[in-house]
Image: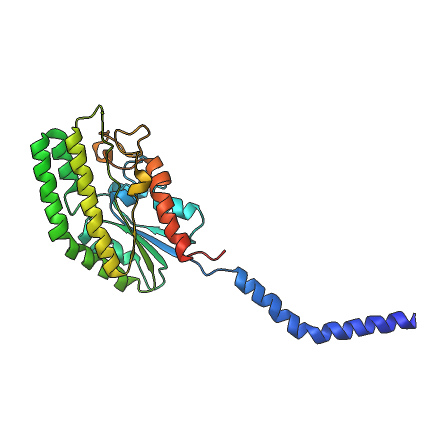
Length: 277
């Protein structure tokens, strides 16, 4: 009995002596396990908002934001703690600067932006190619390409500067555009020549956007490889053909966002270590 009491007393003394050293270790482990919140803001046009999916949140109004667009899917995957989704169908670079950049702040961690297609007249170009002949399509695509190479760079640079100023600590991914069409036989109002010219316009646009993103120190996310084989006229298209309502025409559908955009954009979050796991 006396030996047992002595042993218990020694154990208690030892535990008391070690307690100051053990407690901080436990506390540190708890701190390391808890990541800082990741604040994500999604800017851009219809290719970011999810026009073409057909499932839009009522509060988004004419911006037509869908929870199935890639920003919502990023949030659903748990790659971020909060999402401020302000992309809007029809947006041009001035709209991003004047109406969307206000969502950014010094605490913003990650930004995605997709813009430039509307500045170059995407809607008018596709409409002309759909309703006109090869020559009319060629002319309007050439005009859009000239705009993209001559005027769009400065507009993108100004937009990226505004983003960097409003969110100085954020990592920024600039998301490119897919080629819209597959070539070859197709039941379409667009000839193969017209589809090819529109794909060339997408390549020109992506080249300009990529150069400006790199100049700004942002990451350009090229989705053309992911969408390859899944354009309009493909066997499993991830992009709508001529649709009703008409504004959903030639925009990625839900599969396009989940299987086309999401892998490339999610790769940016993973590569940058935006989430500590």
